[in-house]
Image 1 (cartoon, helix red, strand yellow):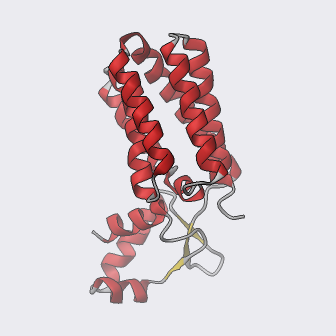
Image 2 (spheres, one colour):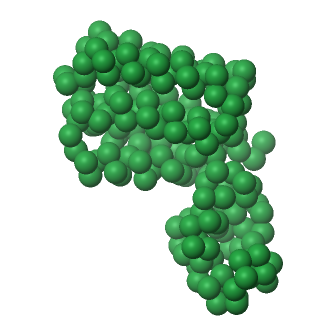
Length: 201
């Protein structure tokens, strides 16, 4: 439970990069001894969500530029495969749903709901690829990008960019232009990377 709660708080941005996690305070917060807290921190460290500092303390990690670039490259490769597989099966109803979701996310104020809408948008476009394991891998990688949603509140330039990137993907899919759709998707993921690498600014 401790691992799950802390992971959620890190990925949602409630615990900001650089925040030091102290065992004694966490033990008090969760009403447990230090042992389960220590085990949870070891798991989070192994998953890359924490960094060990020179003084041996553990702090919430941020994505370095290199890590964000690697994440974008992996996501682009997998999501391009999914979109390529789904494109021949995408129907008008799928495209209408994607457009509705894209319009809904423009007005959303809650970052958590924005994430849900964004996941649903991509799932609508990729879902018909039929590769359950591939879609599961994509969902897992998307979790590492969650903090980007905090950088695009309603009315911000970032939110406008997100909407425009999605629209470009939809319109390319509607034309059945595979090359343009894959390029629009790759451009979108690169912009997500840029948002992630600005976390510490």
